[in-house]
Amino acid sequence: MKKPLVKIVRKARPYIASCLRLLPYSHQVLGIPLKRIPVTETENYFRSRKGSGASFRTQPQKTLQIRPPHFIGTRNASQDPAPKTYEGERFLIDLPNGKYCQVHFSVLTEEGYQLAIASNHQNVGQFEHALFHKLTLPRIKEVDSVCLVLSTANDNNYFHCLFQIAPKLWYIKENGYDPEHIDAFLLELSAHDFQKEILAALGIDRERVIDLKTYPYVKARRLLVTPTFYKPEPWICQGIRSLFLPENFETSGTPKRLYISRNNASYRKIINEAELLKLLARFDFETVYTEGLTIKEQAHLFHNAEAVLTSHGAALANIVFCQEQTAIIEIRGKSYNDGLGDLYEHISSVCNLQHYTYLCEEKENSLGANPMYLDLQLDIRELEASFSQLFSEVSQELQHPLKL
Image (cartoon, rainbow, N blue to C red; front, side):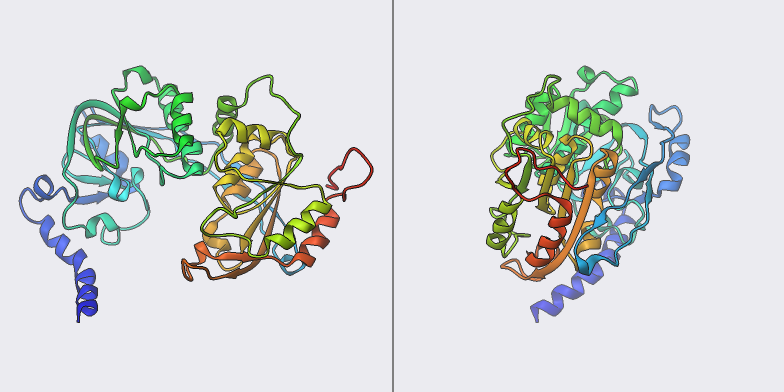
């Protein structure tokens, strides 16, 4: 009886939440949002608040032409993706008495309106958005501070921290805000050293960070909000390189062909990695584990590489440090190819790298059948044929040039 009852309650929750929003002071008492401001209505909302100190600035964004990857493997020969275009967002919100809710990555106004442009799932309607299904939200922590939202889609993930924290700080500086006048930064503090390294490189003292893990719902005297910068643009990639690559960078002492193993990860491992390693040895690849390395150490490895091979994962964020024309081979499962998207192919295009995508079979593991977490089964013979076309095998020559 319990399971059917739980299902009924879940289905009824949006309707219950809608009723609660009709009660006086529902936002003040329960914290729940009253309505959602669609992206197309953002400017109208801020015009209606003229004189309140609230501001919404937008800037035109240059359209990027994104090169498609090369698909390798005989079974993937039919893949022929067309070039894509990408146009990033450019806006800056300065919101008096603004609120940020980490529960569903949402920015709310003083009166309790969720701003879709600055919240997750921008194009979802109010009734479908998960925040509007909540009957209560965490207690609000009020701070008499100017706060900048630094939080990302996952503050414990290497890719999100590397690419999405710094651009927010750089963007407000471009728009005339002095970071020294920011009282506090909203971010879920992580135990991972890479987040600490990023904050230190940006000159942000962790004492100035309001930890969203402890205080997931914050109301600030003034809340500054930028886009998420989900897909990196040239200025972001260049900024990250400048942050972690010294001008006089050492270009020796590291492997030229890297295989980044996920054997220590809990999912998306390569099941027949032992067979793969035998093949890779013939082509002068060396196995590297990025766990435990600093960002600067990873930057050193990737900057000196002529080829990088790995399955889809956050370690591929480091291709931003590669030199132009470096070969990137990304292994992804067939069933979740669309789900993982073209994120690293996008970075390769922006950084002028040669990106190769290999789609393979998948196998369930202890995490079940969720396509995002499936392990990978490679066809070694198929890869051998592709590698023979791409790389020279180890020989007596000192150089092992790519056949690109």
